[in-house]
Length: 300
Image (cartoon, rainbow, N blue to C red; front, side, top):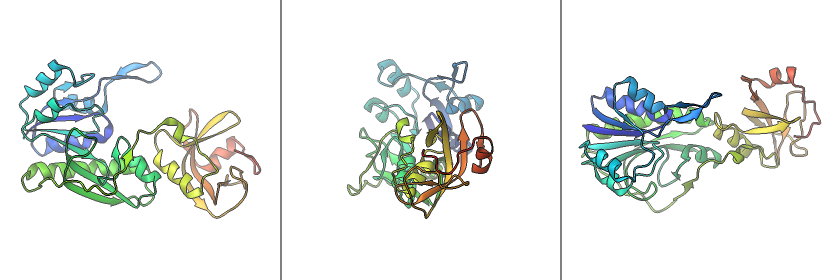
């Protein structure tokens, strides 16, 4: 098929590669414009743009798809289908309707649960037992379109980073399957039961509230690993908590209980297993305490 690929972060790259390996003709890749990053604030192309350029695919980075000239150039590609994977820009009706078969989206949730921007993190935060990927026929509404194929996986203590990698690979396989037998995977309308919305993650959500139950704080830790990183502050320094185990304990919320850095929560406690100080790599609680003492009785 003649395919326009639309994606931006690392999540999207395996989908692009899978389409190329399956023999499809990627006539152009659309990605968000380069952004300033790093200490020098140099403009950095997105992971999708870098991957596409390495494969010799035309890369386009419009600021918006609402411009008439941008829409005309998109339509002129005469694509069979557009494949969208975490692109990050709204697709106007003119863009949705331009490809012969419309636009297919790799959405990382079990629709209609977690429509929106941050389905992986929201599923973890909510304590969902499973999640997955849907290959959705896109409509003008927010993730309201019918689903052609779905895959599922247990969350089972996974971090957002691990789950993102797993769902990216799953989405790549499912998209190749659908495009290999398009008519054999008819679009199924989403149920109206159980609709939830995965709002964009705000960095303020990453600050740990020790008055919450230990199980909820542990979900927060996994949902924000690797970014933005759940954190607490001590002695004016921000410390990211990357992994922790809930344990049975009681006491005043936010109190360090022992030499293992066990911290009480609203109910239960957390025993950190992996942390990160500002400007340093990840380390165990033992290694952190060796150079940054946090004695029992400290209130966080």
